[in-house]
Length: 142
Image 1 (spheres, rainbow, N blue to C red):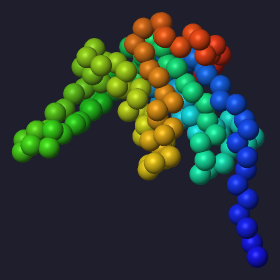
Image 2 (image 1 turned 180 degrees about the vertical axis):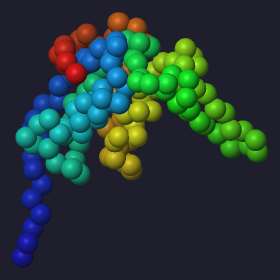
Image 3 (image 1 turned 90 degrees about the vertical axis):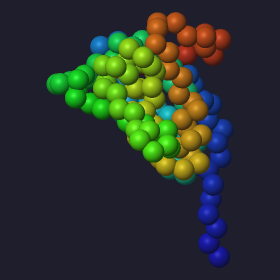
């Protein structure tokens, strides 16, 4: 009789701060998604939440390479006929700078209930301050 062994999750969850100032969006997002999934820990299990919390500051100053500031498009749809809204990276960065980092990281997380749970551990702020000082986050260099 084979039994599946579920690892015990006694590991504590840490908090990390990542400064997005002058960081490339894609490279930074892969580091963030790996921390959220827990791939930086020896106790990583693909189907369990073993990741840590991530705080991203200065999201309004994230950069992209090439001509993506004018050519990269973000689309959303209201559900109504003709309700497609299209924005460039530049427009979205001035309007909602958090959304760029959130959308990039969310695309790198698993789809389904686990991915939605992991996404709640991401906190993104456009400026240099955040309200999570009580958690004593560690500085993470990308």
